[in-house]
View 1 (tube, rainbow, N blue to C red):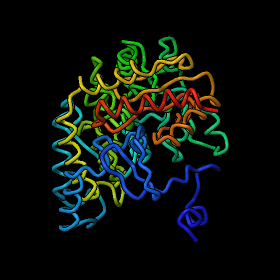
View 2 (cartoon, rainbow, N blue to C red):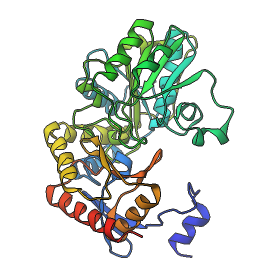
View 3 (cartoon, helix red, strand yellow):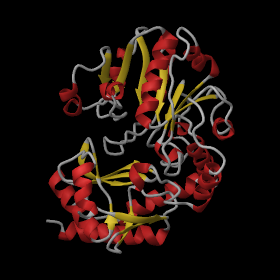
Length: 393
């Protein structure tokens, strides 16, 4: 049997129609198939490979750490320099209140930990999330997903989770002294790269402060310069109580984290002891890769990433493009309907551009390339997208 048939037989499928691309090499902004065809990557593994595929500094860090030690003990019990060095470097770039890092393996797991944290710290049970939000697919994270279509077949879910309309000031009165935490994306990813109105996030923060509710920013997709600033919330005049990270954090290696003040985070150490635990969180090799990635990210300029996003917007002009939403290099190209978008995506892939859609906005085409994409690659990508619009079925 060939690899594709083995894939279908033995690797669990998440859809009826997988892409079935067999990638043999990934480097920078390109992917190479087993047939030698080269694709320009406009989605970077869903905002993961922000510094490009197989960045040499990240690869070197992985090799060096793998030669020293990998897994040695369940997370949180031993002093491991890759964890310490990365946590120190990361928190130095965040507001002083975000000083304690709890390492996990993925965004969903980081959300799960943050949900437990806000309940444990406040002694409350209610969680508030938003319509069209995406926070992960595990049971707790799924309870907060803002789409009934995704939730319904997995009920019963967690109780006391309420969903508000995103970017709607009138709904914020639902945040009360019963609310443990408000989980919000500073730019909604799977809703189709939706940017809130200026001042909205500050209003959410003010309401949380008024009610003693912890504000949790899910920056799994927006963090690490994806929208321009180091973290998307840094464009606002406020700081979350808890920050949730993953995706672009590890340069392609699996890692996630939730970050809070030491006061808040310390509540997980007692009543009960080991109130939250993970075996592989903060894996030495992943932390080494994350530190190398962070060092690269800090050399990238916010203004340059925003400029590249604006270049995409200026080039993607077509009567069938209704709008382009988003910020920086997290953009959604809106078409009339899902059928049109899927036709464009399929045609793009045939023509060497890898892109896809958004879970809660299937009529929008995703643009989230590695942040190192160069102007000539943007021009090439936009040319293919425009041609694909004309020839899409």
